[in-house]
Image (cartoon, rainbow, N blue to C red; front, side, top):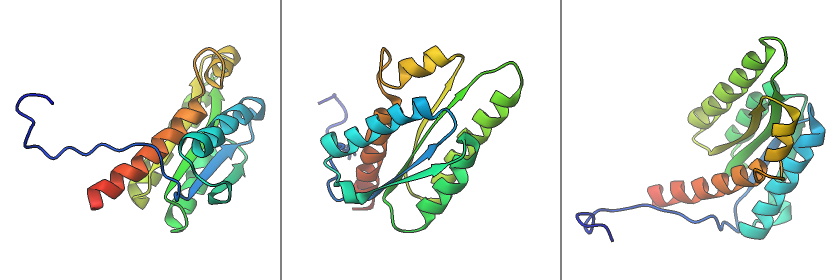
Length: 163
C-alpha cells in the first residue's frame, strides 16, 4: 500500500472474463501476418481470459482502413462487450501509409468513444515486413494477444466503474 492512498478507491481489473462476448475485426490485406495476430488473440481470449469459443465472432474486412466501420457497427450492435481490431499497415514509398494508418487509428478510437464499448487496437504500423512479423508472434511478442487481453481488462474495468 502506498502512503497517503489508504482511503482512495482504486479500480483495477484482471483479464478473466468467461462470460464476455468478444468480436474480432481483422483485415485480409497482409493476411499472412494477420493470421498470426488472430491466432494470438483467440488463444489469449480462450486460454487466459477463459472466453468460450461460441462467444467469439470473427469478422473479416478488406483492409485496415475498413476496420473502423465494421468495428463501430459491432460495438453499437449491443451483442458484444468488446471488439478487438487486428491488421497490419507496412510503410511503402508513398504517403498511403499515413492515410491508412491514421484513418484506422482515429476511426477505431472514435468507435470506442462513440459506442462506449472497449475497442482494442491490434493494428501493426511498421516500417517493414520484418518488423510486422516480429510483432505477430516472434521476437516482439504477439500484438493480437496483447490487444485481446486489453479488451478483456477494459470490459472488467468498465464493469467495476459501473458497479
